[in-house]
Image 1 (tube, rainbow, N blue to C red):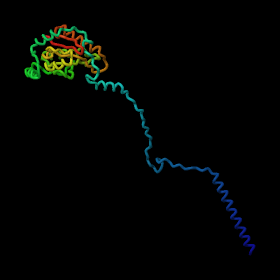
Image 2 (spheres, rainbow, N blue to C red; image 1 turned 30 degrees about the vertical axis):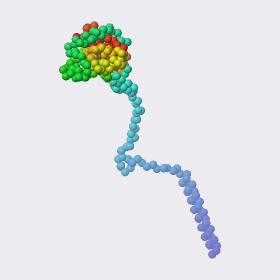
Image 3 (tube, rainbow, N blue to C red; image 1 turned 60 degrees about the vertical axis):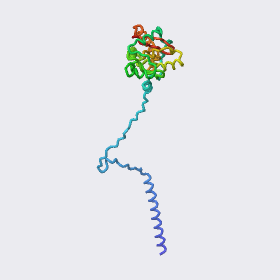
Image 4 (tube, one colour; image 1 turned 90 degrees about the horizontal axis):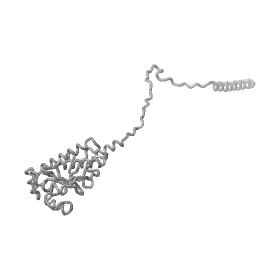
Length: 268
């Protein structure tokens, strides 16, 4: 009986040992088998799905272009320049060469004009405007008015017409050149006798006698104003000199070149 138990126990031990050996060799065989990884098929091949192909959209990014703005900036600056912003060209005896007519001739010419009368005060100015012996003067083609401190923007009708004509001739002479748009600046027009006396106390060039400005017969040109910096004062100065000589030689005007301006009086 004991021998049978011993035999049975030995048989069980042998069987267990065989199982362990089988398990070890099985695991070795598995480890030697290549391991294959399964990758999922594209969705288009699974269960008949019709999936649109995905495409990567490549956005072409252009490098920012730096615009050449220098020329545009210069043009904008030129557009913003107004007459009088730039240094003016001088119109006086230092820059313009024209013969001087005696002041006595200026006075005689002023008194001889059709609408001429001596303007003593503001009451005479009002009278002259009411009877159209004095007419308003505004900026025009080829010329502009300065800020008048000692005179009024009025002239005899025939003198105003002279100013307009000279302005047009000056503009025509500069048309098509770099100086196109340049205008001459009128710095003095009609003065009352009261204004003339006050000015004479401050300005030694102002006459203490009866001024032709007090007849509405004269105006002063002191500067030429350029609209841009492309041109210097050479052409504007040359053309204003030619203009003054032309009218003077034609017997249209009398001129007194002064230190700060050209004094111009109409001849009848």
